[in-house]
Every structure is written in structure tokens, then in C-alpha cells.
Image 1: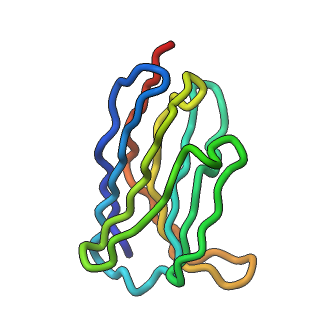
Image 2: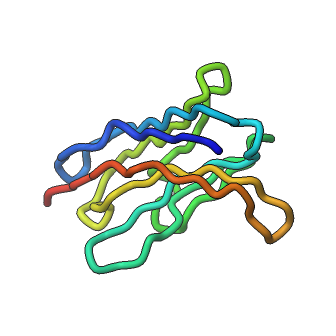
Image 3: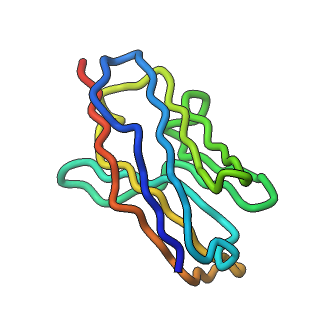
Length: 120
């Protein structure tokens, strides 16, 4: 099992920036992909961005060009750089780690979430 701890959330004005971090520990060799998801009040959790062990990335259309996902393997840390933030980016951001085999996920692990609030 992998333990994930997010940090870096907060309150920011529209147009501002934040960087989220996710520290991974435990059996990190049991996963081959990590990502960020978010959940706004009254809405379902949605994908923000993912990154595979090989470095390939995937972004939700709503954040392309504004957010960047990256990882520091030496520090076992995942990042999400968020620029040009909008009020609709408000929500709880969750870090995820999993083992992906085709379309099937294993060892799904989640952090506790960090709140991001963007004021207009």
C-alpha cells in the first residue's frame, strides 16, 4: 500500500498561482501512475491530470495550458503547478497513485485532500 499526503492548498485570487505537492511513502513500487483529481461542492470527483512512470502526461481539457503535473522521483513527490486560476478551479484536490494494466486499475491509493479556493 502507498501512503499519500498532499500539501500546498489555500486561498488565492483569480489569476493567481498555487503549487500542490503530494509526498508518497510505503510500497511505491506497487504503482506506475500518479495523478491529481478534484471535487467541487455538490459535484463528482474529476480527473485533473495524470503522469505515468515513463513521464507521459494527460490533462483535463479545462486545465490544459494552465496546469502542469510533474514528479521528483528522488523525493517520491508529485506536484501540480496551477497558474491562471479561475473560481471554477475551487475544490478539494486529491492525490492518487495506482497500478495501471490496460484499462484495469490496481492498488488504488488516495490522499486526504487539500482545499483550493479561488476567489473572484
